[in-house]
Amino acid sequence: MCGIVAYVGGRPAAPLLVEGLRRLEYRGYDSAGLGVIQGGKIATRKCAGRIDALAARLAEYPVSGTVGISHTRWATHGPPTDANSHPHFDASGRIAVVHNGVIENCAELKRLLEGRGHAFASETDTEALARLIGEFYTEAGEKGEAAFLIALRAALRRVVGAYGLAVLCADCPDTVFGARRGSPLVVGLGRGEHFLASDVNAVVAHTRDVIYLGDGDLVALRADGFEAARLDEREAKIEVHRIEHDAGAAEKGEFAHFMLKEIFEQPQTLRNALRGRFNTEDATSVLGGLNMTAHELRRVDRIQMAACGTSWHAGLLGGMWIEEFARIPCEVDYASEFRYRNPPLGSGTLFVAITQSGETADTLAALREAKRKGARALGICNVVGSSIAREADGGIYLHAGPEVGVASTKAFTSQVVVLALLALHLGRLHHLSALEGARLLRELEAMPGKIERVLARSEEIRRIAARYKDAASFLFLGRRFNHPVALEGALKLKEISYIHAEGYPAAEMKHGPIALVDEKTPSVFLCPRDGMYEKILSNLEEVRARRGPVIAVATEGDDDLAKKADAVIEIPEAPDPLVPLLGNVALQLLAYHTAVALGRDVDRPRNLAKSVTVE
Ligand code: F6R
Image (cartoon, rainbow, N blue to C red):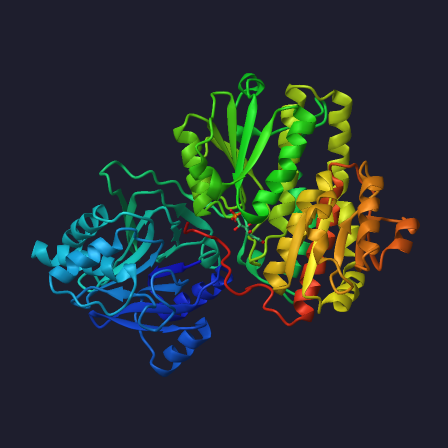
């Protein structure tokens, strides 16, 4: 979704801002713009379309100055047009704002401002905020930083909704102002320069020392220092964090796409998720970040998970493991439904939010709802310092590094592995024997090597994708532990190739979806030699009997199955609960190669954003 990059220092701002925006391109956007302090005024360039269009405009009409703000917009209020692109200005043109988030009382603010004679130049909620700040600043009758901060505070107190803001005031030409509520902002600390951005990836090429702003924080950044305060006048909590990855981690390198790079990174990211988390002596996992004692964990009698999209699929699988290993009932909700469902949450309920970005608006709202009702809330997150990581009572980081491709791949694999560690941990405090615990640890340790074997089949999978790429619709079918992977395989295919796909529990087919089967509709069966093997083979026969082409994801060396399927993708043998991880990597590659064969924009599929920070 929208991105913010701001700079104050000694270097020309515009090239740094454009470079920072490019590093946020993966989040999805439809217009871009910047504002730079130049000769005591704010010079702005902005346009609908790609960052290349903004760069071209800057080449034609350059701006100079060392203090600036910039933005990539993902339209919410008004279509992507030049006029709706950020920055937006107050009535005097001396205050400029870039904004992520949504101002919910925008209609009311606009009415109030129109009553005072304002005529809006755009359809955005952001312009209402810029004009409101300007109103308070003019009313103050004084100029300069102290007066401006008072006006900024006054305006923000009138705002209902979410924002991450970078603001310029031409009367304070050496300062970038920032404010956050509900939409992430991070300060990058350089030598003689500071950055403000919505995502660390925008600043990591320049500094790895950052401060994650909290909700209600305000900052005033100058080249040689900064001040932080809070909207509610309490003291701001400022902690400097060191980013673990370098800029290279968010670059494609030799790979054609970020998605392919991230699929191939999985053996390593999985090792990172497991590192330091094995306690072989007690046949359990070490999860210090949970911030819960063994006694507290033993008293957990129900688990409620909430997540969206791919993370929800990870939750489905994790939930099955928790019930299997720990015998604790576990419910997994779409976060968007959970937040309005009013479920009973007793004191024995442990709430778990699963999220790559840590910023998904629905998942964050679900976490807050669970906390409000007294549940202890954990976050399983990838992005360090994200809103959910900060607001959860404890949690587990994925350590998967930046995921840039819009379609989540390596984060899913790490989420399920981390959930396996949680299931093991709870299991060993409840019902799981030491022998079973030790076996699970050994099998988890073997997974990166097995994933490498699936990746080695990428070229075979590419050929299968080329054969079926023109199908109008696909079915993905699996049973028990493979059901969430069928759902995930269908999601991956549809979001990046735009081919309609449905995931189903294979036996459920007969109750409706089988009507879709014909000789042009491929069915992808997840049928490794596991406890459901015989059962799913009957479902496969039902599809064959109706002339449906079958692509089987099968255990290496399963020659019987090879005779029944039109195409086979082999995966190594693994215990029933873990085999879905391998099938999933195969399906990631199938979706990737299909999308490439169709010439799709794999890393930036249409209409999608990497981090969905609006409801
Ligand atoms: C699909 C995908 C999305 C995300 C969903 C939740 O490939 O990436 O479905 O899984 O938007 O995002 P996070 O995990 O950041 O909460």
